[in-house]
Image (tube, rainbow, N blue to C red; front, side, top):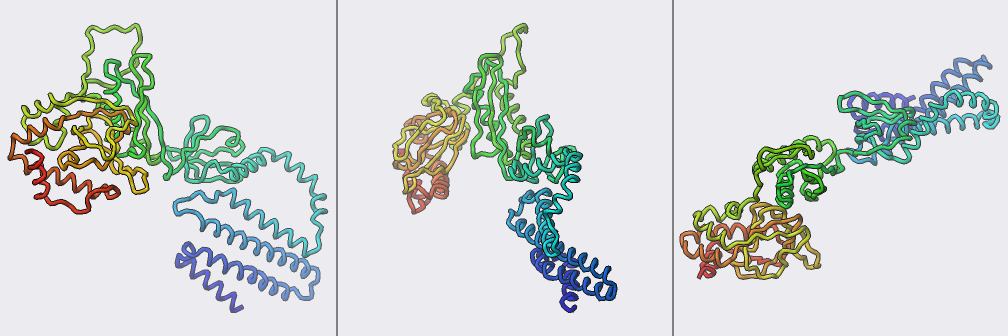
Length: 485
C-alpha cells in the first residue's frame, strides 16, 4: 500500500508540475510497475469483499486477471511508443502517425488477451472457429473500412510522406499532412480547412510529396522575352534578377536557359532553388518583381504571346546591351577617374563571352588584363594541398579580378571558371597603368583599394598558398609606385 501511495502522489506531482512532458519515459516506467500493482490490490480487495460468494468471486477473479494483463500490455505499448518518439529529430513531428500508434497498442492488447486466455486455459483455436462465421459477415459488411485500414497500413510501411510535410493529390489539391489514422489521412489546406482523404483512395492515386521545412524546393519558370533582345543579354538579365533575390538559394546557383526560339516571343527557363516549398510563394513574387525591373531597365518587358495575324505600326526599338563605359563605372576605382580617362580605358578594352564551365584563368597564370564581370557569375577556386579545388568566392556583375596579381607581380593563386554564361570586359593593363601614372595623386587611393582587396583575399582564401604576413598600406604603396614606374 505504501508503494501504491507513493506512485499516486508522485504521478500527481509530475502531471501537476508539468514534468510529464519533460520526463515521459520515467513516468512510463513507473506506470509499468505501479499500474498492475494497483489493479492487483484493487482486485484483492474486491475478492476479499466477495468472500463466501463463490460464483461472484470466480467471475471477479477472471475479470481482475483480464484487466491485470491488459494494464501490463498497455504500459509496455506506451513505453515502446515513447522510446520510438525519443529517437526522432526535434523538428520531426511525423515520426509516429496515428495508425502506427493504433497498431502498436492493438498488437500489445491482443497479446495481453491471448496471455489471459492461455492462463485461463481457453482454446484460442476454438475461439477462432466459433467466431469465424461472425468475422466473415463483419468483414463483408466492412470491406470499405477494412480497405481503408489496410491501405493506411501500407502507407505507413511504405512511408511516402511524413506528418508535417506538404503533398499534392492527383486532382491538384494540396495540404499539410496532420494525421494518418486507421480510416483516413487528414490534410490542412491553405485556407485552413481540413481535407479528409480515405486511405484507400489515397493509395490508388499518384501523390506528389512537396516535403517539409528542411527540404529544398526547385521549380522552374518560363519567361517570354521579345525576340529582338539578344539571347545572351536576355539570359544575363534573367540571371542577375534571380541573383538579386534574397529568398532564392545561391548554392546551387540559379540557371537560365533558352527553352524555345522556334516561336515569337522567345521562351526562357529560369530554374531556382528555394529553402522549402512554403518559402517558394514569397520567393516567386520577389523573382517576378526583379525580372520586371531588370527587363524594364533595358527598355523591354516580359512579352505576351504573339500570333501571326497581328500587325505593328512602327518597328520595335532594339534593345542594346550595356556599353563598356557603363561596365567600367561599376568598378570601385572608376570613382577617381574622369569621363575622358574612362573613355580611354573603354577604347583599350574588349568584350568577351564565356560559356558556362569554361576556365577563364588558371592558378599560377600571369594575367595581362583586368577582367570586369559584366553579366553572369564567375567561380573563384583555390587548389588545396590534396589537389582538390575549393570554391572561395563567386564574382558577380561589377566585380573584377587579376588586378592584385598584376600589381604585385605574382602569379594568380586562384582559378576562375564561368559558373554561368559570362560576359567580361577585359581592360588592357598598360592602359590602366598609363592612366594611373599620369595621376600621381591617385596612388594613395589606389593603394588603399588594393590593400583592402588583399586583406579580404587573405581572410577568405586561407586554403591557398598566399603570403602569411599581411602587408601594410606602406608596403602596398611602394609596390604600386614600383609598378607605375
